[in-house]
Amino acid sequence: MKRVVAYIDGFNLYFGLKSKGWKRYFWLDVQKLVRNLLKDDQELVFTKYFTSMVSSTPQNPEKHKRQSDFLEALGTLGDFKIYFGQYQLRPQKCGRCGFVQYIPTEKMTDVNIATQLMTDAYENIYDMAMLVSADSDLTGPVEAVRTLFPAKRVVVAFPPDRVSKQLKLVASAYFTIGRDTIAHSQFPDEVRKPDGFILRRPLKWR
Image (cartoon, rainbow, N blue to C red; front, side, top):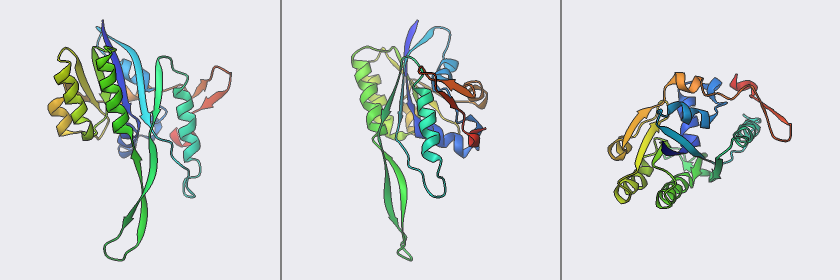
């Protein structure tokens, strides 16, 4: 069996689903998703999920709670770890009127993924890395793994409505995750934590 470690770019996946209008699929068991993408001779040994905590806004007061509930649901999975970056507001000034608005920007995810991808290759944790992202900033790390560890494969699974020409050029293989696979990789509506607390799919995600 080929050992597989999955590296999931949480926001890249989320915004891919959002741009397709697939909110009902946000309650996603990402570990089950990866297993549903593997071949018979491949075994998922660990899943690494990369994200940042968001803040609620007056327009969307439940945003933080929905994400927290989702991350807690992910926390019930075995052989799974969440890596946090930072979510910052970046000022953007209008060239015509001078109005400044603040655009949310995620920091550190690409660096965190690159670090884990390279470290795990060096420590021989995987035979194949599955990268769920379309972030072209990860082209360098993917190319480096394939150059330094030619026996290892890096397969890129593009989220819906996301693609990177640069990653296509350096990946061992690539494909786009389909709707049916996502639909069959959902958490149950209620997820029970080890302490007995029940997490429920947010109403906006039904």
